Amino acid sequence: MSITNNTSTKGTGPIIIVEELRKRYGDIQAVDGISFEVQRGEVFALLGPNGSGKTTTVEIIEGMRSADSGRAWVAGIDVRNNPKAVKQLIGVQLQSSAFFEHLKLAELLRMLGSIYRVKVDPDPLLEAVDLAERKSASFRTLSGGQKQRFAIAASLVNDPDVVFLDEPTTGLDPQARRLIWDLAKTWKRDGRTVVLTTHYMEEAEELCDRVAVMDSGKIIAMASPAQLIDQLISRGFHREQEVRLATLEDVFLDLTGRSLREF
Image (cartoon, rainbow, N blue to C red; front, side):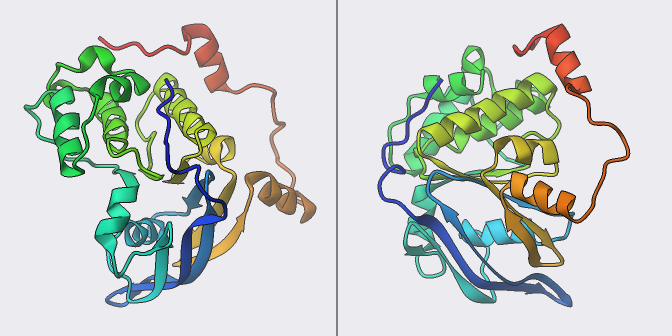
């Protein structure tokens, strides 16, 4: 299901610009003077171990957290000076999302749309994450994976130019993970920009045009996944285990199918 964005295709060049961003928590320098750009229509990932600063960086860009110094712009809007305007342009899927548990899914999406002062048709949003048949179910009755997918649908109610995904496939089975991957690819085809954090390197390699690797609050590498792999090989790296043409996940999907099964 394609949910077409009507505005993100306008213009070219970077939609996100970050310059010398810094954030400290007590003795910990969480973000240490990083700069980067994200192009319109790009799928871009921040990768790094826990505590590397990637989540803090994303929260600053989203206007959810203030930087100590440095600047960030989204579609030309200064996040520090006008965070409200930025939030109108972005959609955010959080790893832990809190919704009114007793409301139906369709009701929740309409309510979220009212916050943005837009009229929402829940059906295509729920269909995109394979929850159309659960639109009359309350949020509390969903499984963990269904709640994760609903959070992604909820991030689209304002038809955002940029979608931020925080560990979007954590805890999902292979079929659900591939559904989210296909959805992200659809957004890219529609001209929407996607920024994600993930611990799954296969996910980043599959989806991303570029990745930035963070450690100790700094960006230590940034390029396309293929370029980073080629750079590693050029330094003499060899895998100890022979790379096979298929993975165990490929076997699983071949045997059980790609469609979701929910009871």
